[in-house]
Image (tube, rainbow, N blue to C red; front, side, top):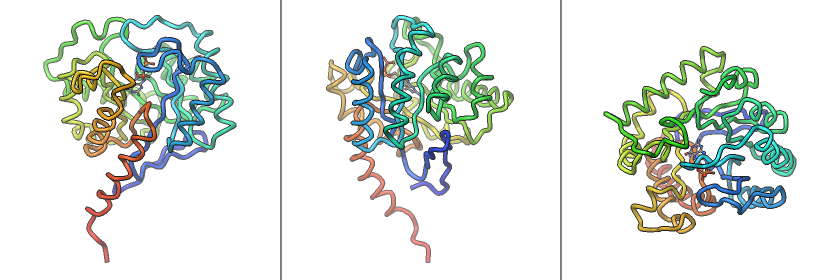
Length: 287
Ligand SMILES: Nc1nc2ncc(COP(=O)(O)OP(=O)(O)O)nc2c(=O)[nH]1
C-alpha cells in the first residue's frame, strides 16, 4: 500500500493510486507485436475490453497504431476509424476510465470527446500540437521515453547511462508539460521498456525504477510480453510470456510503479493481490 493516494481524474472516472493499478491493453490494430489482428474489429475490440474489465482491469488502454519496431505508420483518419468507435462503446459499457494510446493531437481530441479520460503518449507530447491539445483537454497524460522513432529505435540503441538519460528526458517532458499548462498532478511517467532499449537497458531501468520516484509523479511500467521477457525466459511466442511478464510487473510494483500496462490482466491482478496482502502486513500498525 502507498502512504499517499494520488488519484487521476480521468474525465470524471477516478483512478485512485492507493495501490498498484492494472491498465488492460486493447490494441485495435492488425499488426501489434503480441496480439495484432486479434481485436482489430469493433466487436472484437469491445468484447476484449469487456473481458479485461471482467478480469479486474482498473483502466483500459485503447490503441490504433502499433509502435513495434518497423511498424507501418497509420494516418490520422485510419487511427480515428479504428479507435473512436471502440472508445465510444467501451465508455458506455464500462464504468472504467479509458486511456487512448496515441501521439496524434487530432486523435487525442476525438478520443476525449468520445469518452476517453487519459492520454497515453509514447512520444511524450513531442508531436506538433500535442502539448496544446493535452493542455486544453485537461485529462491525465502518460509521458513515455522513446529513443528516436519506432521505425529506427531498436537499430542499435546506445546510452552512456540509460537510467540517467531516461530520467533527464522525463524531467524535461514534465517541465514542458507544466509550461504548456498541464498540472503536474495530471502527469504520469513511463521509462518506455523496449522503446530504443536493449534487454540490458531494460533490466537496468527495471532494477533502478526507484530512482524515478524523485520525479514526483506516478510511474507506469509496460513490459507485457515484450522481447526482453522472451529473451530471459526463452519463450519465443509473445503469448507464452505471461508468467515472465507477471514477474516483471511485480518487480516494477515493488520498485514503485503504480500502474502496470498489461495484456494478461487476470494473471497480473492475482499476483498483485498476493503482493498487496503481504505489503499491507509490512506497514507499522498505528495505534
Ligand atoms: N505508456 C506505454 N504505452 C505503450 N504503448 C504500446 C506499447 C507496445 O506494446 P503493445 O501495445 O503490446 O504493442 P504494439 O505497440 O505493437 O501494439 N508499450 C507501451 C509502454 O510500454 N508504455
